[in-house]
Image (tube, rainbow, N blue to C red; front, side, top):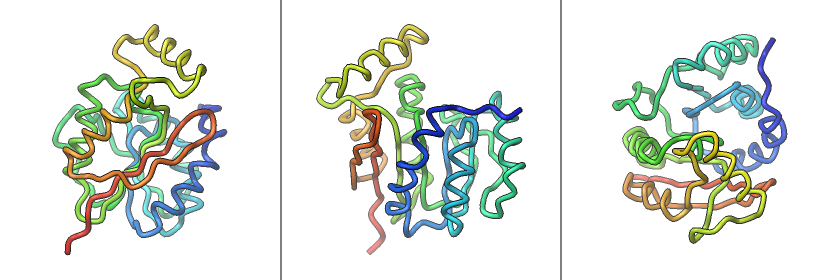
Length: 199
């Protein structure tokens, strides 16, 4: 029986509407931290011109691979084993990267590794889209996010909702420029960074 995450079912529609616009020019995408694969299957089915490459840490790869295989989508690749902490990453030719609900699970060093890896992967015109909760100017955007952050830290002291300013600084160090900050349901955001196209 396939594992299903309720949050992925709730947010896949709103995220898709953002991705339709932000990934309009992209042809190949790497998803980092694909989890159950619900997003990968849904987005690949609705964005048929985009080749979707899921990935996950090796220990979580099997259930993801099962869902991908059952989907039988021509633009949805078999998942890669990818741990953002292990550099260099697998070589994949993509012009976009997407990740949902991952940065608050990683520790701070892994978040830096995430942006470092994306910076190496994306070339001119490349786009990075990241979905999840973020703090702004060191403040929670809602009481529910504050409660969620407490739950995260009780589960793993290295986890936390990340500050927008900190992740934007990491993106800039990787050669990416903030292009959009979309408000999403349930006090989440979709942040979009781009690497300038060659002139």
